[in-house]
Length: 93
View (cartoon, rainbow, N blue to C red):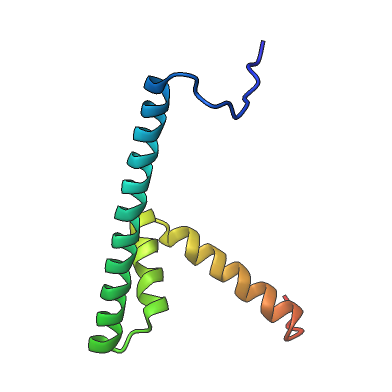
């Protein structure tokens, strides 16, 4: 039988303290995420300033590299180009 989840208030001080500790752990993780996002933005801005590569492009390059998704991105772009040329430019396939 599947357990139904409800938003109940823990009934003991020990349970409440445990939930609060979990919330503190989550907020600490969120703070780390915010700092990392800020660091990423700073690196993207530095790359744009130093090498004149748009921040958006730097971020996309890094994300593609991180996810090892170059082949997928390349295939997606080829498909997009084909669709665009066929539908918008009325190019015969």
